[in-house]
Length: 450
Ligand code: S3P
Image 1 (cartoon, rainbow, N blue to C red):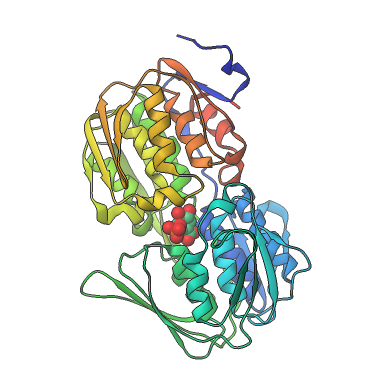
Image 2 (cartoon, rainbow, N blue to C red):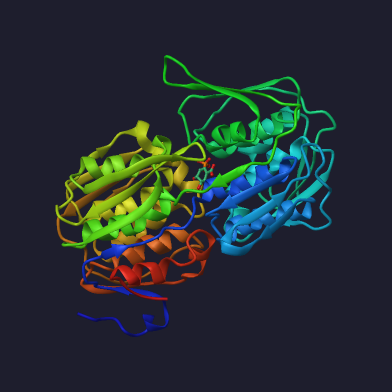
């Protein structure tokens, strides 16, 4: 039933679809792509990257590394080649490093620049300039870098000056954040002494894993209380290497949930990264009764990958998501909330404070958008409780996406099952992480209008 054609019809929209069928190649992992470009640029010699995500965020990282002296080129067959400058040899950029929408770019690059004797200026778009930066700059100041916030304390734009000689620190992370952890490790890489990061709640470990492939002296130890201690002894050069970027489990989450909520679907998503520190959404969905099978498990560039087979055969049953699982599905809560809205029963999520400082306040944006689609829910300070009826909500509304790619994609997925069309105010942020999302979803059977 098509409704509300006016005044929303000029907006991107999603309407009820046929079951999802087929195989879809999901683009490269965003976190791994950023790191491969950064570490390749910092190394001596050549780094060859296959499967790099060519979304806007990663391209902003590449542009910044070029401004600081790295040679980065796309070759035939989609392979990227980087000629690095070596640690300590980054060139002072002439221009502001414009980071667009990308928190990972700016926070990791601040870590890298903290130990280089150069001055840099960072800025970003209307979303990024609202996001907190002190979580990184406070730690990097302890290591000797200097920061000047130009407009508002803790927010971009900022100017920074790297330390002549970085001071290694021992730092216990006050929040579970792979970006903060990575920034400190990357600053420590230019000191011959030992920098230590303790993470009470382990987060994605791509920085640690990939730095090892580049020859860094880095160790991680899981402690008895579940925390992790990471040490890096820097002061030696990294060596360029070959990286195969697996497909992104966060991007794969969108077709996965689409297949689960559209009855009779069956899709295959090859070569998805299944690092346990990123796999929380899939574990949760499986506990809710989702039919997800992992086949062809193997290891590529030190990361585990598998092909996922997803069938829309069962109705999802609501659960309480354990708080301890939040870091491993931190980017998936928007699309998970869509799945919970279609499930039978009450799904409760807690420990979600970090969602408020992502590309948008994701807790507020999801709660508001889902409510307007007819979902019965309660939003708390750091909790979300969704009462599913086992039938999709009504839809038929215009969703505000606040420059957030994952909010935009989540509601376009929900629109594949609602009786009435869902419109979103802006689909352009999708290109930051998943440029081909609409085509890929439509090839599987969705009815999305870009
Ligand atoms: C990322 C870490 C996470 C995640 C972001 C990517 C990374 O951020 O939300 O999308 O690549 O390190 P936090 O470290 O702020 O949790």
